[in-house]
Image 1 (spheres, one colour):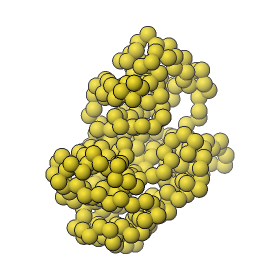
Image 2 (cartoon, rainbow, N blue to C red):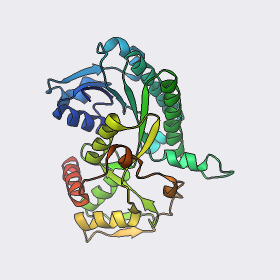
Image 3 (cartoon, helix red, strand yellow):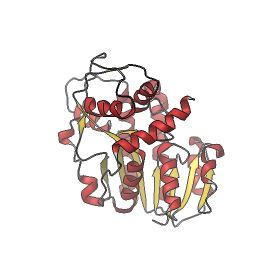
Image 4 (cartoon, helix red, strand yellow):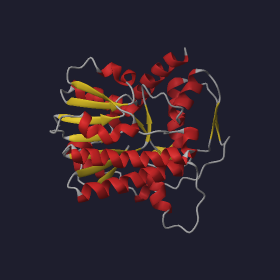
Length: 306
C-alpha cells in the first residue's frame, strides 16, 4: 500500500492504524468530524486531513483530489458501546453513511474498500434461521453492522471494487476512552475495587490494539475480495481465564466475584467461525504479549484516573 483513506482517523482504531501506516511511509488521508481529533497526526508530512461530518460524506469525492488510492478504510461509527446500542435511529444512520462511503470510494477509483465490523455479527448469522431467541440491545448494533456489510458488498461487487471486512473481537488498548468491559475491569483493579462479573465459563476473546492494526494492514494488502475475516486470536480461552489473568497481572488481591451477575447467553458459535481464515490468506496472527499489553493499557488508564 502506498496511499489510503481512513475514516474515523481520530478514533481509537482508526487513529492507531493511521499512525502505524504513517510511520511506514504510507500516505494517509484522514477523515473525521473535527481537526482536534486528528491533530496528533498533522505532524506527519505524509498526512492530510479532511474534516467532514457524516452528512458531508457525499462530498468526499470532491474534497479528496487524489485518484491513486489503494485502500479506503471505514472505521467511523456513531455509538459503539453502552446505551447507544439502543438508539436504532443512530445505528440505522450508520448503515446509510457506510453505504455512502462505499459509493464515494467507487467515485474515487479506490482499489479496495475495508469495513470495520464486529464479532457480534456472528450472533446474527447464528440466529437468522432460529425460530426464537432472546435479543439483547447489542443486536441492533450488530444487525446494522451486518446490513452495512451486505449493502457494501453488493455495491462493490456490481461496481468492480474489491471489498473486505474485519470483524473485531473485544478490543482494548491505549486511547480507548470507552467504558467497554476491559476498561471497566482494569479500572476497578487499579482502584482496588471488587469486580462483579458473570460466571464466565463461556468462550471469550480480547484483542490488543497493536494486533488489530496489524490485522487491518494485512486485510488491506492481502485480504481476498468479498471475504469477512474474524479479527482475533486463533486459539480462544474462557472469560474467567482472561479476567483472572488480568487480575493476577494488575492486582492479585482484588476480589473477583464471578457469578455476581447472571451469564448473558452468547449467540456466537465459535465452532462455526473460521478463526484461521485471516492467517491462511494474509499470514496474520496475534503476536502481542498479553501481560505486556495489559500493563501498557493499565498504565494509560491510570493516567486517565488521575
